Image (tube, rainbow, N blue to C red):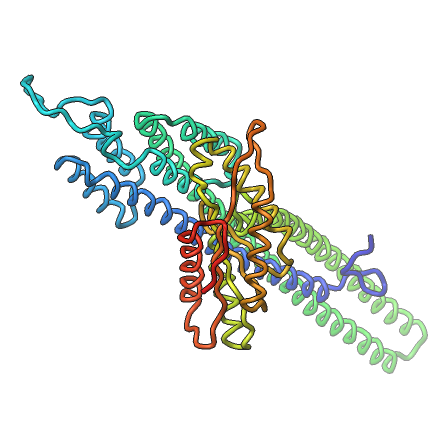
Length: 481
């Protein structure tokens, strides 16, 4: 392979070598800046998922608190205060265990409220007083969806263990076990994200150190070039001086023997100068070659590290905008795309329509056939709807069994036709469980951008209201705002 630094005569030009190295350093610095942006996105993803878990936990607390005694109620308030800031998840787990000890376990086992051995009124039945167990399980499932991520085989197995435990829940005692496992999983998720951020931070520290070392090498190369240029100037001046002295001596000599002696003396001096110059050049070339090789190895190492980090970043970017169960876009990606389409609508007047889709009675599917079957149904519904839509349409899983579709450039009538086509597609699909058909349909709400629309949130609210109307009118139908 030809040397990219070689000149026309095969020699390496220091200026060309320096320029190429500067270009490589600039490229690496640019890649470092891009990776820094990815770190910011990763941090935002962690904050987003932490917020989901915090809100889900607060939702569970609000369901339990009306039935709690004063002591447990105070503990719930303390836990709520802890969740208000940047919580210590180990402390949160201890609070949950304490609340379980004080209230939930006693209620599940039907213990009495007295503690002095006397008679006391029995506590009301926990199962009869609390909201139905499936409501708690569905709330846990929402948290589980937000915690699904690619943090290695150990994390995946733990996630599946918690999922299996929730599927096997038949009582609130079982739910307590599942809640503890879920808290452990959330803590491991948080630790994994923190470790990933630390790994990226260390990578950037190493990159910064490597860049400093390479810049030092470049300065050394510049110094060698400057020294070589100065040495050449000194050599040229000395050579010119010897030639001038020879020329002057020729004018002063009277005999051929004197001329011969002068010429031989000056030629010997010039030969000595040439030998010293060659030795100096060879020494400088050896030093330059060592420095160039060291710089080449540093660049090679850095390229490998950057390539590895870019692949990791690509995976993280994909996880940040992709629903892990269905493989389509998630809510975060939907929010960004909706904002983008709305800005295009405001700037260029390119309208679009929005569909909000909900699977009818899907909780019943999970309760009767299990969440594993429910997950398979969600994936199949996603696949069927994706086959109906255009490549330019944007399908996302908004949460649970709810989906959203953005239809760029499609007015209301066209959007209603697409919604009806999706509804018929799902209705005609045969979802089977052990040979038994699972009845599954969807309800769809449709809204189109209006000229006076002020925000994408308003468009979303109209589509969501239309979805509610479709479900209110009997489900398995399309309603438009």
